[in-house]
Length: 145
Length: 421
Image (cartoon, rainbow over all chains, first blue to last red; front, side):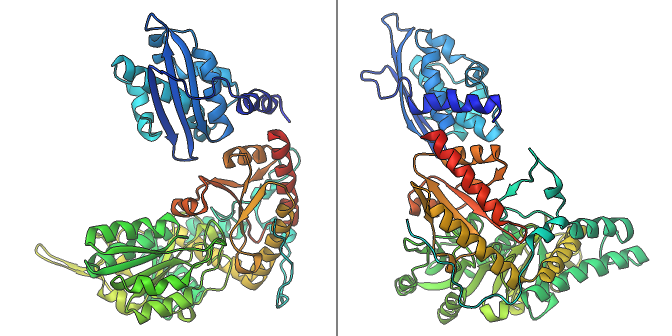
């Protein structure tokens, strides 16, 4: 087994089996959900802001699906907690993919960024800002709402 | 888990030697970590033997021009090659006449041709279009679409928990209106179920309906005789029977094809064109507008020759042995659930789920072991809904599949379990 595959086992599976930020948040300020129709992955994300209304104080998710989709969403919660909503709304997907750290085929890439797409929809909606154009097509494809 | 016995009522008279046949397939010369791919995705598409690849190259090098109408030698040769392939398709499915054999882009296009050209003219309110819960989207969506467009009802024959059609639903379906068309796959692409198409065809004709058969998953693996099936249309594709992509075949009963409007309009399909009217060419050219996939059709014919030489009885028996082996071995893996009927009532297809592991993760880890399987809904979303899953993992066989491929699948699945435990 190659080193990369070893990482799949360790990083992805650790997050898949022990998801961080798992569960719905009560009194969430922002919320969205999405599905990847190709493999039936589902993710719902909840966000609570700090008193400044900008800092992401807590983020939680519920979902089911393949290991990549669920582990990537789990990693995402760690990545964005404590950051400003505006920064996360503009977060390039490469930052999350860097965390995942293994090459993904185009099909599995959609699994990996499902959670990020859902989070962006939640943040943009709560701030009344439009979803960036590059995410719009994906939002349709991944049935983000 | 259920275990399935090896017993076959009749021992096959002929056997095939898969190890020897694999020498015909260049893909198996390619080694990764010292091993060829364990290719268990033949239901999606088959690998190609040298005989087919060589036939197409020779055709391009020595006999290629556009078909029909050309007066020079090359065009004559190309036309003879193309029409020769049509005769091979006719013989392969025992159709009464070459004129009833239409080359299409794919089985999908063939089914769309029927739905549009026959369906739009013959369906309306009060009529019932009958499909089954087992259909591939290509024999489901066109009928759903045309039914909506014409105001016809869209009814489905449900399956039981083993993935077999519940024919006791037919009376209730007949009571809904005028059943005009029954569309069914001879073999389910997801479960491998062999469907009772002869019975359905007889029932369809009692209702005054036509019987449309999607034979994409059957034609590569079993003898097809359109006259014995008693159907009115039958579609299959080249690429699932060792031939090239981009070409498929539709057979239809002549009186139906004669009465139908063309599907595509343009060159080749006309008899005469003037500023105010156009008349259609004779069969089968009425349905072959534009330059066809000439070399692909030729390669399709070569593929049918290849498969026929191996022998469909031998292929069926070989795949049955692999399916029995697979179902026995997979049945021993805790948490693994096999979908579909017992081995005796299916072709070389085994769909399953592994508890707690998404099929895409199963397929990804199997890929690292050099095992190629398909994971997803297999273009059968209504069936996935019926089975209560989002996706399954599917292993499927062909004449070049080996017992060792099954061993590698099982070893890979044990790794998947270990990884996710």
